[in-house]
Image (cartoon, rainbow, N blue to C red; front, side):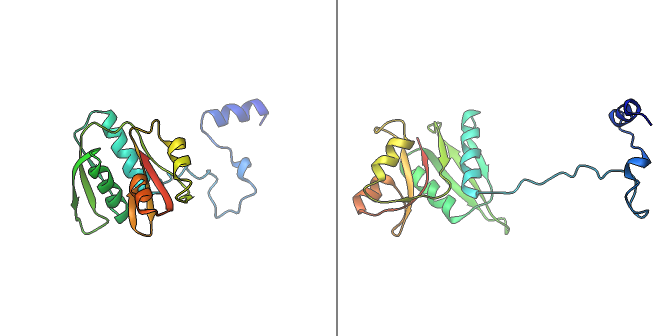
Length: 168
């Protein structure tokens, strides 16, 4: 078989047995199919915020987010307190749980900061300048020893912690 015949054979999807002659007889001469890889869930919070942001861009009024976690619920509580999302309902499906969130159309951008960098009280202002478009609106969500809160509340309580994400 010449190189030209080999390339046309491979382009047409046929395989030649001499290409796999080095394999033992118990193995078939066909190459293995391309396996579909499942996406790995890196961050539940990232998936939630991305789903909300995409639904907001499409003009949806509600969005279903799964799975549910304590961090997601606390993050949504901070967003609810500042009026960026409406009410949300946690649906227990005896698995990982789901959250139904009412959208108000106020989210311009939201995201997760990974890895969760340490933030001292003095360095909160640097993070605000780095992540938010203006000082007038937007919030950075921190996880502190006093719980999950926005950067203004952390500054009032004089508590540092780790940065979770932002929204504006």
